[in-house]
Image (cartoon, rainbow, N blue to C red):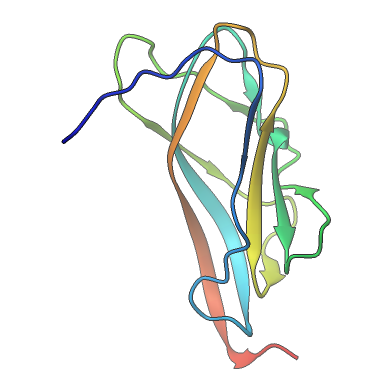
Length: 130
């Protein structure tokens, strides 16, 4: 059964993924970009510097892209998702695993945000990590 659930307005949106090894633990990957399929309505623009990543479960979060690109709002009268491509500040990122955090903590009260999926553009290197 499919239920269309409308997002509620919120001022803080925090989503953190688990540490992802892309199905090949122990191998080095090069991450080139992420694609985020999302819906975002409300009066607050979201800066891409609020998307962070952590490599190899190190405990240190780094801004994914510090170019001050705004994640645009989608039209509030439909439920279509938009896609944005974010490239890391230092392309590519070499790692064995990666986690992502979306830390939007200064949204207007009427802001609604939802992520449908995250696609990671990466390549696995053929030799095992040291």
